Image (tube, rainbow, N blue to C red; front, side, top):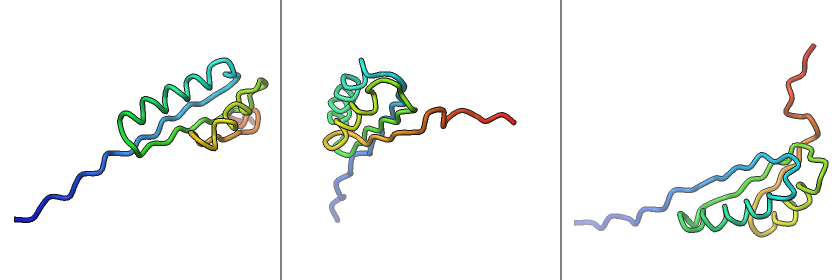
Length: 83
C-alpha cells in the first residue's frame, strides 16, 4: 500500500481596487495578510490604485516589498471611452 502524498493547501489571492483610500488601505492590507496567512501559506495581496489623488499609491508601494503586489494605473484608465 502506498502512502498518499500530503495535500498542498489551496492558494489565495486577495484583490483591493483602491481610489483615494489612504486612510484605510494600510489597515485593510495588514488585516488581509493576517487572515490569509491563517488560511494558507500560499497567498498574495494585490492592490490596484486607479489614479488616486491622495497618498494611496505611495502607501501601497511602501507595503509592497514585504506583503503585497502594488500596481498603479493611469487616472481614468478604467473608464470606458465614448466616441
